[in-house]
Image (cartoon, rainbow, N blue to C red; front, side):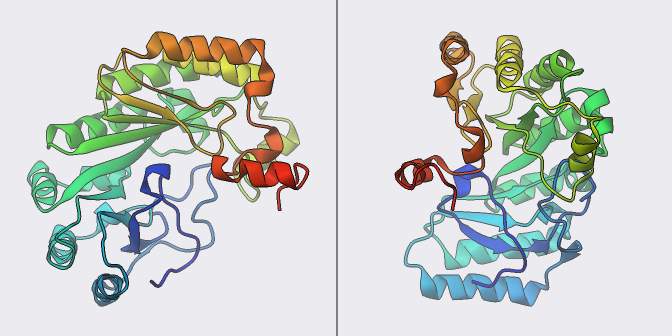
Length: 305
């Protein structure tokens, strides 16, 4: 497979065939994010995309999942997306699901009829970044959309019969907005009632505005104890029956999972146990390191190599 620049995918797409259909992110101005800073957004030529799928068919005997990268596959013309999905169905009849990232802007571009056609042709789920349900936090972090608009786009995806996975970031409001960020984010999740809720914890990346704010002292990061308190407030205010909750990203201090609302009390109990014994948390130096590598790191004396 041929890739340009760094390629990102959600944790649940670890075993998926990943094919870039765009390069970069069409927004690419979020203050906390460095994912696509090294490349300018553009559409990948269709002939290259289709050739990659043919190469993948020659390489892999069995492909059950496909993830369409980079940040904004949905901005392509609907007819091009149909061709991509038809090609996947033709070359990989065993494929069970196709997923992609979708920004609020790219979802807004698609009519409901187009989204339903994409669903019928095999696009089964869209990953959308909420980041926060607080308009104050969203404005601070230059997300480009108020919470109401993000919620509406999530509801649009669900109304068209596609699964929706929505992510937010613990700590994104810093210390002053801890409570507001937690409660308003929970309200946004509740309004969308997505199939999947994914929580990450803020990691400050170099060459981002957030990095500069932290080092200038104008943004106060949460302590580990405050991260747990914000997580408690979030979970306590969640009311999204059937949503699968996952806090299993490599950025998280605490690994937490369950299905709402039935596992809510169990997750709150796990947070309380972590508060009483902070050794349960991922060490700061290991954040960003997949859990599968923890044992290897321990064997080399805690160094991240």
